[in-house]
Image (cartoon, rainbow, N blue to C red; front, top):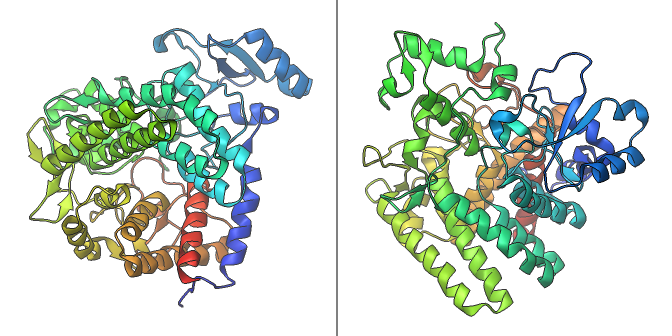
Length: 504
């Protein structure tokens, strides 16, 4: 059934999104709730750990919590100063943040890096300016106190970041607040975060482009404890089982798996953690389980860094820092050329990730190919080629994440709200409004249909079957479909707004 942009069926969804921001908000009064983490094991009866940065005053934080929390909750948490090195952490815990923030929902009960951008879009549309500003401020706090924007504020995620959308989020917020002093104050942290991605080990010198690269070489603690199947097997046990029984042609399997000892290598675990830094956990985009991700410069990351370069240039322009504007524009122009050289496939009319170890461009068709439209990177001719390739990805409920069914959640037949947003915003940017409207209607229709059944929005959808019932189709990683859900809420709110504006 067609769903026009003025349909009254949209109103309950919009109301749900607005009301759910409160449900998903964690304040200091909720610190025990936030500290509880279903993704790790904890000895029964022991307190939940809250780590604070060595730059913070532990006594002041403790006193603040004593003013807010009842004694029954205070006894269930323990405030500790974060050790200097990751290997000194014996018990994992929550990383303290000084302001309220919005979590995605379900098992994801912490502040996430790139999720915060999409959540922020919805907060801004719903007039929740303080929470939207907190999201930016707290990611800056993470840079200043924990070294970078974190995958999420848990101690086991200290060694990895998340796709860089902080500068874009800051400028989106600035359009509402026009607070120049605040925007100026962000520049040191934004530039520090930029260089996190653009010096070794994230920089690949042979291409001048960047890669995802987490430092840890052991199993990710949250994966060992929480990503189990109905037989109790961990994700890593299922990976080993796959390697035992199926041929692997996408990469040299001996780099990641020792068949004689039936064991995964340190490089596999580093690739696994780096794949989680990418936000795309899990797909077969970089070979099975994306184990080979550390040898690729991906489309998504480099498009986001191009956008970051443009955004930092814009902030310097707003501040009248003319010399800095030219420096950052030069960074962006150089990256643009490198993206065209290494990632654009003229014959296919698509952008692909590039394997610098084998010096070959990939062939795995993934919906991040449309992200250059969102960033304004594509020429008019490239944009038309991409639009011509929409049928590869378009299905009944919107855009497939890839053209491959792998049993992983970041592949077909699944569709994710953030990737719909990048593509739809990109199409609008280049004047393909009819395509953008059609894709918006398809995806929003799935969301509304499933909302009318369950009364909730969820993390992801099967856009082939137009269903939120996905667990049976996901064979690796976690198979749940979390309710909440922060980034779906934010993206749906933004897409409905754009769609209605266009039709008015």
